[in-house]
Length: 158
Image (cartoon, rainbow, N blue to C red):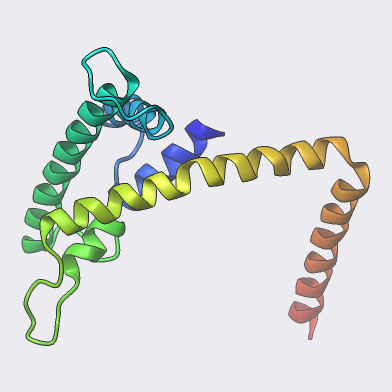
């Protein structure tokens, strides 16, 4: 579930599709997450130190993405709503100047990834577990889907 969640977030937040370009951030993000719940002692052999290093590398990757996306937006090769980063790059204030600095965009992207990663993957895991272990819940979901399909069919007929 964590891999699925990271893949979805990479696409929606950073616009990185599957492939070698996504493999590096996956490992770095795992190191970053491990360091968030570690003892904050910054020595070379600690999880916290590895997390800080991973955070810096992630920031560099996101900054490179910002540069790429800015060029694509300038050449009109990208949609302003393509992903979160392009949306943030497209924001303008009242004076039609850039609303957020590159650093603020990097911070927002990383915060959203941290906030959404474990919460979403844990929720999906418990949901699938509940559906697998409780036949009445599964039946209710199936029945709700059938009811929705019936309603759609009725709307088409009318």
